[in-house]
Length: 455
Image (tube, rainbow, N blue to C red; front, side):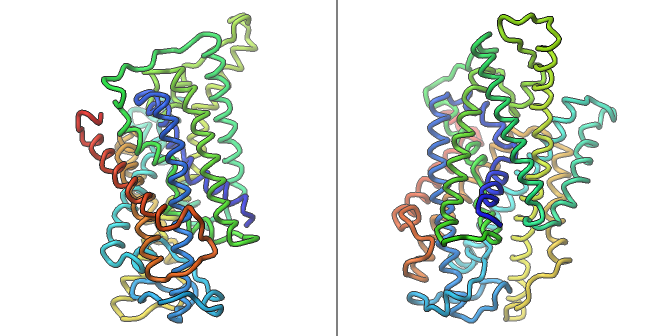
């Protein structure tokens, strides 16, 4: 597919409606902290993605040097290749999943740690998406099915997303592009309507008072990280891209993260200023009572009332449609990672590598295994603020600590310049990424478990 489709996929991976928790995080921590943390995370996320691209290049060299069959098995038992690759080695690329890379360069312990973080993050993310759908539909339709209506709405969501999770990314280009366009319309509507309300009527509520200038900052970090995390899906995003040059893939992620940072700041800042301490965990639900009519217009004018009501309904309901696109993307990534781990384990038992790609039935079975448990959790618990706070801690570790360590280990194992090498994935950048990720993860975990000065 064209690189622009890869940018769309990357934005869809990130913006699965988890970003709707950003306005509340901005309000709790303060506007300047929110903007600063968003820009800082965008730079870190770019460094992390390029570290993974560099490690993928080096894994291809190892695969070719050891005669590993293309698209088969796992890197679980391969020793590292010494020295730079030959032309023949470069001509035998093999796409590697993140568990493959961790097993190859970080060993069994690093692979186990990564899989634990991935499972925790993916389950929490998909749980959040299903809960957003159920809450949005319940807010609009009410208890159509009685006291258990929310669970029924999650069931409807399951009936749609589970079949989509069995399709490959290349089969979803039209759907993903259309929903990405709709998301931009929703964000524009939220930005314009909140700006109009601020200009004509002022804030609905004042910003919350904070005990100290740093209050809420530690809790802000995992929420922002959650909104930028797609690193577990880098191999899936780049695999079908028709790159004009090797560096095209670097530009894909730089464009995606820069675009996401601009969108997040432009959206979260005015919404947090408008609703202040009344900002809800999922900001779109604040529009359930939005009926703003501009000054100078007659509030009884049916034209303005219809416009305000239509905009509000669209904003409340569109995230429910948006997560229909994002949930399958995450289920595909998680299912493929589970399958790679299973194939690695099977290969270890027989002392060899399976030279054949996985069958369609095997792929579908693992994607179902990934897709179904979060739906059951979402049917029982719907509070997404608690889910994103904890899940974001795993996201911080997975998209900062692991890629930094991976890049440094890969450089030691297979030295030499790579097609995707840049100043953003050099040794110093990789070390800084891991150290910053460790600090942010520890402070975020402290805030999540209730350390007083981090709250």
